[in-house]
Image (tube, rainbow, N blue to C red; front, side, top):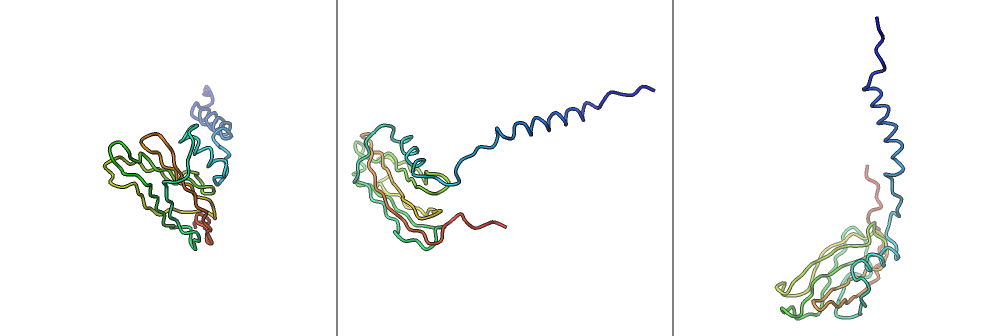
Length: 159
């Protein structure tokens, strides 16, 4: 009797396993577990480009001291008449220490009535929050608030 050559299925599985193990370092990306002031600044640069960000017109309402970071109320409002010629196009909210530097993007138009958004956010630790509004004339306005979080979110182990 003739002996058959090594099974092609086994050879395929061996090669596929070797290729998967060899590609594993390429698939794993090393990045920080939290945003940093540098990543927040880079995220802001991605939105505004080289434009000058002015202080004023934006009001960021968030409690300065938060007992639980899992559900923090936040309101961002912008002083704007919200007419067809003068309105807020978008509101962006950034943070320093959550896993991602961008907390949210809100897109508005002249028919929105007023330039205000309210939501709840999760905060991983005490940090600085920055809200930036882009107006219809292309200008950018901002407000910043420091928030102290006593019980940080995203730190409990899931069982």
